[in-house]
Amino acid sequence: MTDPARIQRDMKGTASYLGQVRRQGALRVQAATPALLKRAMAGLSRAALTRRPALGKWSLQEIVCHLADVEVVTGWRYRMILAQSGSPLTAFDQDRWASETNYRRQDPKVALETFAALRRRHLALIRQTPRTAWSRFGIHQERGRVTFRDLVEWEAAHDLNHLAQVTRLRRLLASSRRTRKR
Image 1 (tube, rainbow, N blue to C red):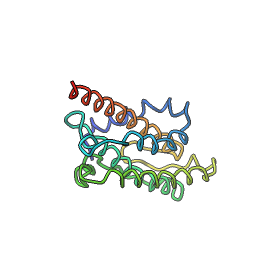
Image 2: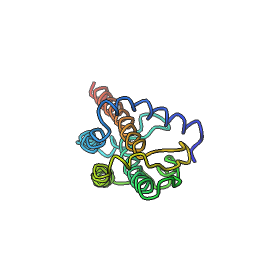
Image 3: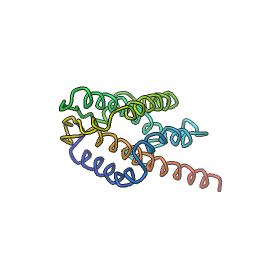
Image 4: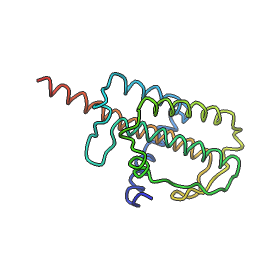
């Protein structure tokens, strides 16, 4: 696992967006994310996509690869909760996945396409799940009891957290281009 301080920081960052998710609607947020990422990536060079804003922070490409991987994990968690309520939900070390699967060398377009396709599939699953099943749950290794509803909302908040990162990255890239032109 990632170190406990990192886990707490990441959970706190994502949790800070839950109010916004509840106002906007989790499905609306999740449905909009792929197009927002595509727009953010449009016209950027490979160098820009892989530029990290600071030591230990992810580039836009790494964020997109992470979101694609999270969508795989989330799909499994949705299905475990719905089909086997009460099942354990394994955590994963996002930084280890990023380094061991080499996000920096992956094709960002493939990652985005994968994310978008899986997201469409999961939105269809969520929409067809009866509201009575939304209270089914799994036991997350780090967060404890997580209902289907919690997971749907948490993933939308996770999207908003990373979209905010992407917005900051785009600003950084734009300001560095302006600085170079002077």
